[in-house]
Image (cartoon, rainbow, N blue to C red; front, side, top):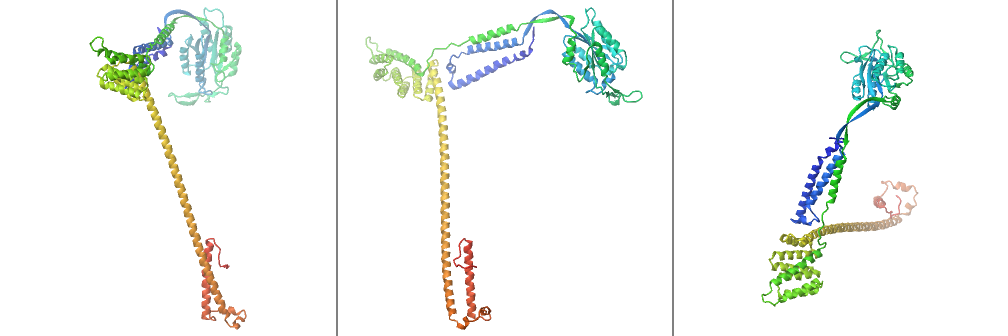
Length: 636
């Protein structure tokens, strides 16, 4: 058996790893659930069946395994088949003379020709190919074969050092190629289906190539010349014994040899066979033009081969994969019938409690036949009313029985059940607590804890309900209603905590916004107070400035009045002077300015007048600097 697509087999080891990862995820989930709900956590899962889940997982992984096997395409049942190979015969005649080392094409003619021929072999299909190398002579390097890899290996070995006789003997190359094709054509009918791909630079130094070209044409062999190099030519590099560059090749006279591609001779050669010429660098040997030329050769039966053919068997693993996935989908859990609400579960439990209460009363009845305890008749009447849905009348009957037997815990349970149905949850919880204080019976305590927890859950206190329900399950783990109510209590507690958290976040946000608003108001108030203080300070400064100006004006007015009074006094004194002094010529005052001619009193008066003028000038300058106008009216 073998696989056609072995890649998919590397994916198969990942399936056990996936199984281990799923097991680890199950254990982690079970641990978290047990931490949350206790030892009875598995009972909280609806339709949980670990064995069923294991089988589902087994069929899932099995289906994936067979699916990967189908994708890998298994094959077995080998049979031998005869295959007839059809195609044509092509001989590649490669020039390996020294002129092929010229570097007029990159990297040189030889390497460029081998690269192009390698691409040609990679694209060639259903044809035999042979190799003939030539220079001054020719030889067969590789006979006709369908093994293109071997032909490519021989092609890469080509080089001028394989020939001791140098030159470009095209005639010898055509002859060797024609003989190789004739040998492979023995026993074949008809001609054609054969071609010679002549790869050379066209410098024919020896041989009668026209005669050989005509001989090929007569035998139905197509000659396709391929030119290598440039018509402008190039130098031939040489190397010393150590493989280092030693200049360029020279002739016997010491002149550097220039080799050129002779395109005209190649065109003449192609014309003899009615074909066309190709050039490396212009027409790639792996191009469509060359292969279209080869397609015109036609095809013939080359050889018959017997090969081993395997039959595809992928449909069997795919069928097994389909069956595994179908089994995985067919496995479904059965849904148990259980209460869907807290009230329904409590109601079913309440009926059981009432029957227990009745049975407890029957056990306590006296041995005297025909005598029925009064509390038992009240319990029966209350049970009838309870079953009829008349919870008020049932409560009255149960309370009457409780008055007659206050220490009977079963009657207390019945009273609590009736209170619960009347939605008096707090009173019902208190009554169930009283029953817990009265009895040590595990069954009654378990029932009382369950009913108390359910009442507290209905009253909106899931935290207390969780404690009581867990206590009831510890005494009686088989209570499915208690498990269901515990799960509801846990969900409501989680919702309540989320609501409280959201409410707290909302209050914190509102408080933060209120504080920010108060802070802004405080800042605004402080800013207003600061502006008001600045305004009052400016008004005060303005008032002080006006007061100072007013005082200064008063002083100036007083000084001005004083100056006027002094001037009047001076004028009066001058009025008493002799008339002859008043009638003196106008030139005399100039003589009175002479200090030597003035009396002492006159000098003192002039000095006092100058002092007053100086003081008045100072006050006027200060007034102008403050923006006022002088009061004296003088122009200085």
